[in-house]
Amino acid sequence: MAGVYIHIPFCKSFCSYCDFYSITDNSLKETLVQSVISEASARSSYLEGEEAETVYFGGGTPSLLEPESVARIIEALRKNFVFAADPEITIEVNPDDVYEGFFRDMHQAGVNRVSIGVQSWNDKRLRYLGRRHDAAQSAKALDAVFREGFENVSADLIYGLPGMTTADLKNDLKKTFSYPVKHLSAYHLTVEEGTKLGRLRKEGKLKETDEETSAAMFSLLGTFCREHGFIHYEISNFALQGYISRHNSSYWKQVPYIGLGPSAHSFDRRSRQWNVSDVRKYIKAISAGEIPYEREELDRITIFNEYVMTSLRTMWGIDLQHVEEFYDKELHDYLVNLSGKYIGYGLMKREKNTLVLTDQGRMISDNIIAELLADL
Ligand code: SF4
Image (cartoon, rainbow, N blue to C red; front, side, top):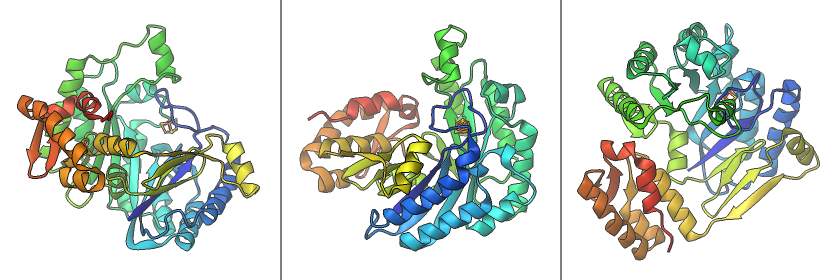
């Protein structure tokens, strides 16, 4: 089992909270597509022995690509990697990129899952986030996606904006679930340095949401989604039965993946590597027959810590048998001992051979995970 990630590093403008790598000069789009296709061919052996189960077009803004370009990339992937019988092929879509027939064309290109960046149903908050669309465009995009052939649809929301209340979040959730979406990713706003919001914070012009309100929002999110039949399968992700994102789950389960395009990361269970975060350098290197990447060999403890970090965020939790078999008895015992305290506080629970966070534990997951990381 393996995944393929394609990074499309173009945006029409920068959102105020975002620190992903992208550029606003879209003139290199076609050259980039060609470079990604060349990279797929040059690295066709990276997933040797593994079947690709998922493809994810992320960014940046992959919905800026022509459906025909998406089709060419998928065709190249199929040529260079061995695919499972029913791969999940997702594209992230910004509502303002959607035109009549957009989803029909993406469907024909081979995409079978769509993730729409709604973020908020409130125009004022959308402007605060620097989004290019308004709520009416999100509504139009959601109407179109179901009309034009997709049923595996996810929506993204951002909560915890300054001044936002739990009632505001409830309105966003109600409006989102008035569409037959099967999956929801809801992220608390994090203010990153180097972004517009980061600068506002430095200037004292941004007051972040207090912990109590954030906790109340997180609790509302979980309750609301459960009441609507959604499984809370990862801290920020919810899905109806049968619609858990296979691609994201593979990251959390340490399945190998290849990342194509500028700044894309790859992981093969022993090492992690990442392409240069510069579109022009990337294109130049690929056209010269080189892959512009840096690589880090991962030692046993680093891989173990990554496993703890990612698995504890999910409903599957830490598989103690896997830890004993794949790592060793020492790390198994280390986890069993350390988790005792959290089990006592009601923040974790042990179910047969797994350790999972309780709802209460999920609210302070970062703190618990930080304490469980090994430094042996
Ligand atoms: S949030 Fe998405 S659309 Fe906005 S700048 Fe970041 S990558 Fe681009």
